[in-house]
Length: 121
Image 1 (spheres, rainbow, N blue to C red):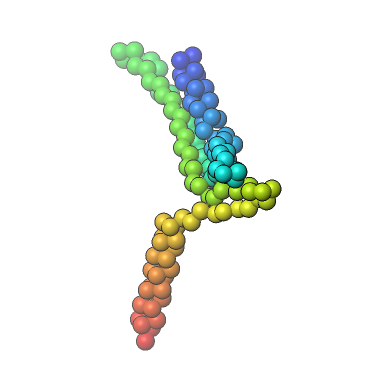
Image 2: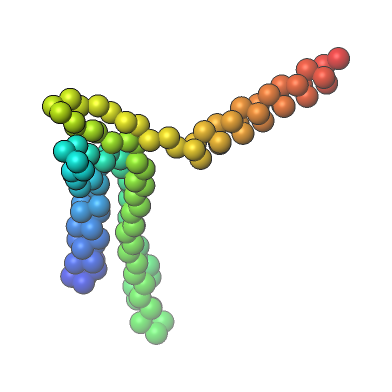
């Protein structure tokens, strides 16, 4: 791996490190009318890398090389911590898309079950 490739890999790893920080989980705290609000999210991420080689010599100085690195992250809000008058409470977010998807999957399972029961008769 050349110095330029190694530098690129280290830059990408640094970006991944910056992405997967506590500040992504706990957002900026702000105050409204004496109430402190702290947004909270889940952060998931992963990465992968690669390398490569190939034919180094023979006919017309054939050389091959390769490298690669990538990562991705998903941030999903889960709620807020509310601090008011010295009392702390948790307010979860409502993920409407997750509720809709769950309802669709449950409906699909029910339809498949009904068809299976009808087929047995």
